[in-house]
Length: 226
Image (tube, helix red, strand yellow):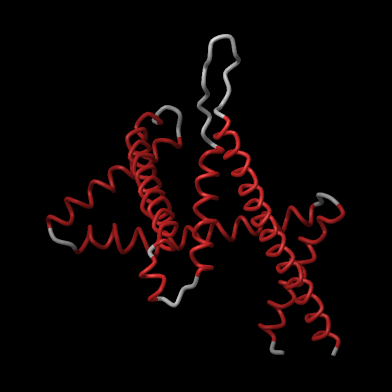
């Protein structure tokens, strides 16, 4: 092992031990490792933004672009300068325009992504198993249709779980219709299964990362003393 590889191997080894020291509670070694991680991540993000956003999409077009390009670039440049006003209380109102644009654009992207990437896709995936010609052409069987029925039931039942409208009858307390309560109970089961699967995935990912780090520690020790 050459010197640079040895140095970086030792750095990773000691940083891993510093993170694992949290087993004994919060301590200066763990805090130093987390501060270092946050600092490196912030520095990497700053360099990435400068290299891939500010220089090629703002400064270079402003210096080398045509007149129309420069005029268009002035808009994001002005919004960026106004956003810097948020750093001080006296000028914070200047950044409201930029913040409103960021929040509005972010909300539009989130809603568009949810509708086009989730809602429509979910509807299409739920309806696909009931297209018998397409299922037969793809070599599907009766199990494919049954799977589609199960997905359809789960989708409807889950939506029913989040439907909170009630019927109001004279002399009775407000309550949901019986069929809606039954569907909500079924939806609760599907939600529980989904959350359980997600939790299992989180634990599996965490355990995989733990095994990888422990393997790195053992491999480093073997390299140093072999």
